[in-house]
Amino acid sequence: ASVTIATGVPVLSISGTTTDADCNGASTGAIDVTISGGQAPYAINWNTGATSEDLSNIAAGTYSVTVSDGSGQSGNQSFTISEPSALSLSITSTNETVAGNNDGSASVSVTGGTAGYSYLWSNGQTTANINNLAPSTYSVTVTDSNVCSESASVTIATGVPVLSISGTTTDAD
Image (cartoon, rainbow, N blue to C red; front, top):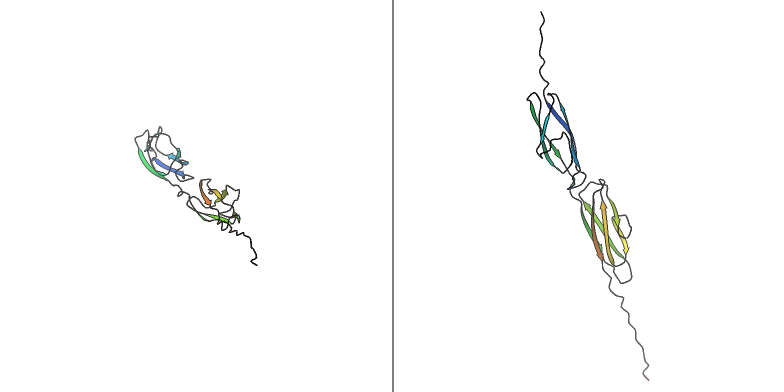
């Protein structure tokens, strides 16, 4: 006589890895799901309406997937896609002191994004602080390490005119 032992269908398991969005507000996130166990075919339903195993080009948020298999098992898993805070620029400046001195300055400070900032001013300078500026409007683009960028501008005003006094003298006899 022989005995046959039935080995049921393995338990359905859902796991995955996430890729966060590169920039604030960008749809560059992704979820790579792995389904194991259960019995094919699998029916996949995301809270977004998608029916693919993986999601790509998604924004920050929470995503839930329900997977049902051919044996009647089902499971749920949630994933969170994060994003960096928005880049924010603040510019301080000093106007030219006296007309023609070209001694204005500007400085940009950055919050948000992902540290590792680079700077490009409209005059070609590449530091957070620029000096010896003639009166004009200067713009700066700041790019973070994820290649997210934000721009702002500042106007350096003309300094006070140089006072010039001229006259003639006459001798009184």
